[in-house]
Length: 422
Ligand SMILES: Cc1cc2nc3c(=O)[nH]c(=O)nc-3n(C[C@H](O)[C@H](O)[C@H](O)COP(=O)(O)OP(=O)(O)OC[C@H]3O[C@@H](n4cnc5c(N)ncnc54)[C@H](O)[C@@H]3O)c2cc1C
Image (cartoon, rainbow, N blue to C red; front, side, top):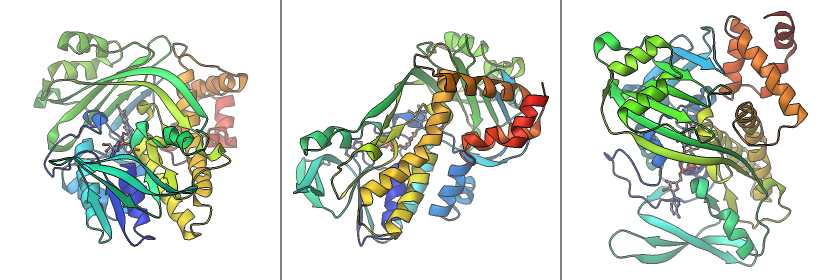
C-alpha cells in the first residue's frame, strides 16, 4: 500500500515511475503472500480516508459502489476502550472493506496514471550505487525462468514493508544503520469472515472492544462488502486466541457484550480462521542519521511498523505520501534528510498513541517513565468520562483517527472536563 501511495506522488515529479512487487497481481485474486495481514480486519482511520480521496479523487465513493460499507462513527459503531463504551457522537465516516478489495482499487487507480509501470513477479535483491549515491535496484523476475536485471533510477523508495531492507543495506554501503525503538506487544490475530442470519445481525456495523489491564485481549467485528462480516480476535502480551471454533468463541466471550456475543454465536463462518503473529512495534529512526545515501528513501512500514490494533499503518503511509509531495515541491536537494524528518514528525504522534496504549497494559513489558504513567492515568480518567461526555468522546476519536494531535486531549476545555466531571 505504501509503495502505491508513494508512486502516486512520485509520478507528479518524475518522468517514469516503476513499482516493483515480488507477488503477481491477479485482478480477481483475493490475497497475496506479501500482504498476509490482508486476511485480518483493516480499518482506514478518518484521516486516512480523507487523504486517499485526495490522492485518488472519488476513491471512497468508488469503493462504496464496489460494496464497501460506509460507517458513521459513532452513529453506527460501538467502541469500548479500556472497558468504557464511548457515548454516541458523530465524528465522521469511515469505510469498511476487505484489504484485497481496497488494494485492487488503489492499484487500478495507480495503473491508470500514464507514467507509472507496475512490475509484478519481480523481487528486489539489492541496490545499485555510484559512489555515495543509490542509482537503481537489482531485481530478479520470477515469472517463468528467473532473469536478473538492474533498473536504474534517480530515486529508489523502499516500501517493502516491515521487513524493508534499507536498515540492513546501509552498513554494507558504508553508512550507519538507524537506531530502533521497539515495543514488544507479542500480539496474535485470529480472523474469519462470517455471515449473520437475519435474526442475529448485530445492531451496529462496527463493534470494537479493546484490551483492559488484566485482560489483554479484545476483538473487532465489522461489516464489509457482500454482507460479510470480519471477526478479528486479538490477544496481546502472549495471551493469544485459539483457532478452534469452541476455543475462539470462549476467548471472545471474555470481552464481548452479551448481545454482541449472542450474534457471534449465531454467525455462520464463510472461511477457516487465519492467524497472524506480530511480535513488536518497530520505529527505525532514519531522521537521526547524520549521513544517508542520496537517491534512497525509506517509506511506510519500513520506517515504522505499528501495533496493528490502532489501525494506523495505512493512514501514516498516506500522510507520508502527502509529506513527500511537499518535499518534492522544494526540489530534490537533500531530499532524504528532509523527507525522513517530515516522516518522523508524522510517526511521532501515532507512536505516542501506540506506546501509551500498549504501556497502559501492565502485561506489556517496557519502561514507563513518570510522564507515561501520568498521561496514562489522565487518559484512563478521560475514557471513563467519554462514556457520557460527547465532547471528550469526539476528542478521543479525532485523536485516534489521527485528525488531531494527542496534545488536544490536554486542551483547556478537555482538561476542565477531566477536573470537574466523573
Ligand atoms: C494483522 C495486521 C492488521 C493491520 N491492520 C491495519 C489496519 O486496520 N489499518 C491500517 O491502516 N493498517 C493496518 N495494518 C498495517 C498495514 O497493513 C500496513 O501499515 C500497510 O499495509 C502499509 O504497509 P507497507 O505498504 O509499508 O507494507 P506492506 O503492506 O507489508 O507491503 C510491502 C510490499 O512489499 C512487497 N515486497 C517485500 N519485499 C519485497 C522485495 N524484496 N521485492 C519486491 N517486493 C517486495 C510485499 O510483497 C508487499 O506487497 C495492519 C497490519 C497487520 C500486521
